[in-house]
Image (cartoon, rainbow, N blue to C red; front, side, top):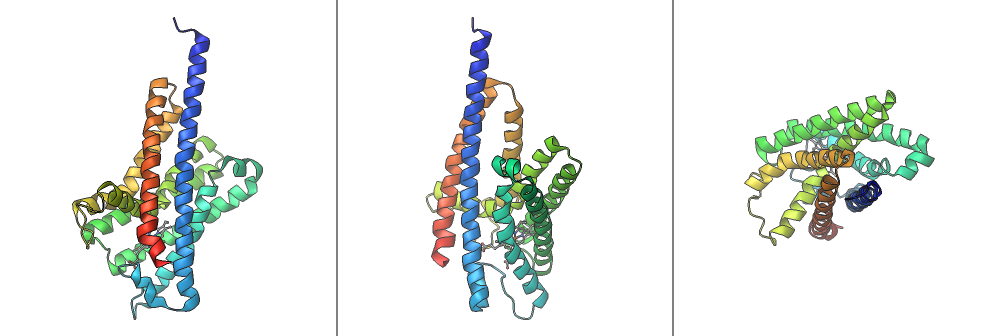
Length: 272
Ligand code: HEM
């Protein structure tokens, strides 16, 4: 018979491994997000400094449009603030920062949500006034991402103000994943390139192939489902669940790392 002590020890080891692998996944994500920050600052910041605004259109389907002053202004706001949320978001999840610098956590959190809301409204404006690459499906996918950013962001902020920190943690994870949607969208393509050995079936130049359609919604819904799975597995007392979840997060870590490397090599580093 398995003694109680053995069972408790096994539970502890399983929980520790689960914690370690989810930490690894998180830190791979942070590295990938900060690489995105580097790209945003180096590429778009470099353009702002040099004044060669036409270079924006090397990376974006609409980009800078002559005569569309409002749209161009919204794009500038969108890109200017993108680096702030993408850099500041992950910092909210470092336990040592929350513990030793609670004031920083509160202010960085306010800046994160406020900035994310402005970026979202600017993105919605561009989406509506210029149309979306990917047509109606791309438009709906972006609108879904925008809705979830606003909804989860408000919930995360409200639960923090109400000092309901158990709920706050969950809403903050969901909001962070949705704000990272633009990044997941690109990681998705990086991973697809890797998994299909550069063949990329289901994609078209207009972003209306089956894989493009999947990713239009998947860049919000897949991370959300993984986030919910994480919260459920973390709360579970079952060793069976924790062990299977540890394997799943191990596989996800490899996939995420692969997607980020491909993305950086193909989309970011060549233009820097
Ligand atoms: C709050 C999180 C968001 C961040 C950090 C963010 C960041 C960015 C960045 C960095 C780019 C340039 C991408 C590149 O160079 O590869 C971009 C482009 C774009 N974003 Fe966002 N974005 C966010 C949310 C949204 C939302 C919710 C929408 C729409 C509802 C949106 C609409 C757009 C559009 C339309 C473009 C491309 C503009 C064009 O083709 O000219 N973004 N975003």
